[in-house]
Image 1 (cartoon, one colour):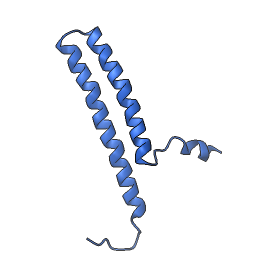
Image 2 (cartoon, one colour):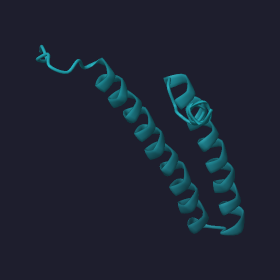
Image 3 (cartoon, one colour):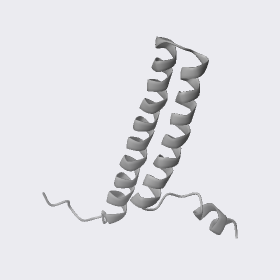
Image 4 (tube, one colour):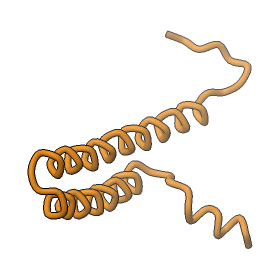
Length: 83
């Protein structure tokens, strides 16, 4: 039973990754908009840029991890790689 619950929190496909990245971006942009209201001027805009940059970095890391995981599953142990 615990394995079934654990599988709910594993990103398996790129579509799921894009949904999660979209949710992260939506939250980050909302937080960034609040920063521009709380800190008027350049400081607020720098914080806004930092929140969006964090989503770009996190999204890239999620997509890279999916690619590396897929490549590791496709690699068959014992066989030399052909290039």
